Image 1 (tube, rainbow, N blue to C red):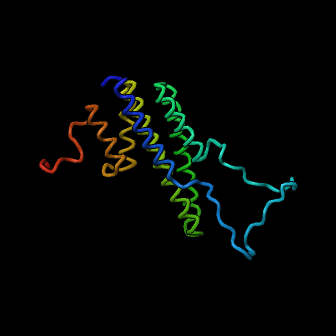
Image 2: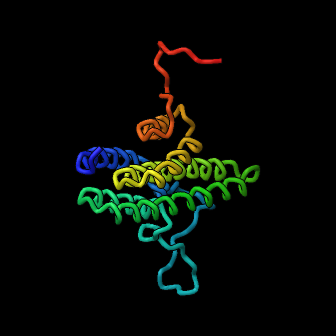
Image 3: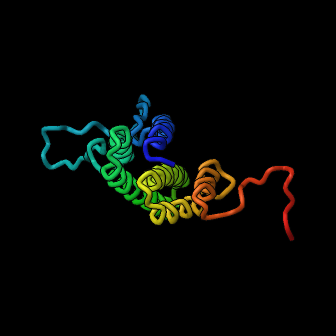
Length: 198
């Protein structure tokens, strides 16, 4: 397949990933304040320099927003056919989402049996960021394929199948890429007319 013919195909894939990422809940969702709750944290006095405050994650690279920003930058690079920049941004997004997923999983393990509400919340975030990592990995594989670097695309596609499972949508798409590349010779899922060999 010619590179110029693959650009619209890659661009369409990026748009679907960006659309999927945009509907995921934001990490810093505001919790409504309950009236007359004595256990609720009080507002921080900004003039008190001895009070430690959490920093916002909106500008941090190690955040869901930071990973999404990298994905958007990669999408822009693909649109301008700058595949080397796109690959770099997607690799960075993979690292960010993978680290976030690992951190959320560690927090889940730490709070399991202590505070199940926090453990469940962290488990959910670990799954969401792992999904984002796999989406970034898939897009990176597509960029490598567009560059003709099959040797870089194949391992990424296999990682996705291992992470997602071949029956999930992204796992099926990754396997289809392997089939199109000729790395595997059996289509999946098989058509209803084909019989399995024993």
